[in-house]
Length: 150
Image (cartoon, rainbow, N blue to C red):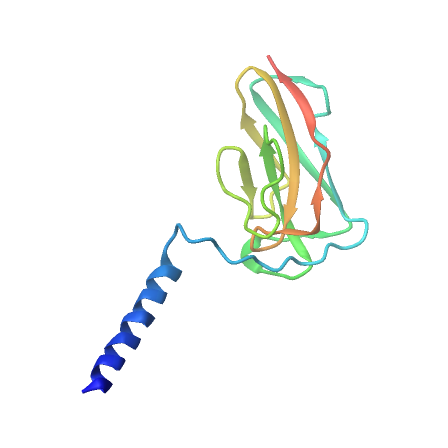
């Protein structure tokens, strides 16, 4: 009679483990980061640091030392841009970069965009990531630039 009780207990433990693993509030496992090529860098072609711009801002991204590829291709050694708008610090290094109003994704390999910003002072920073939207090791990020929207 103990065997069915042990079996039921094991099944309940297994089900509880799957439920916990599927819990969106549970912390995500850290993702291994791909090594960044030596001297890879990203930068703003446009706008320039300190520029005064209209609310519809043309941004152009530059990259050297690493190839751009759409995230869907999943090619190792390549990546794509993310634009951080008014970010205080970089997103966690071992998790995908969030996709929200302050973290814009360019996973199709885009190198420019027009973004709308409210009047005032804003900071912009580029963050280059792999196909999983995870930053390289070390991160390939541009210096922050400050722009003034009229």
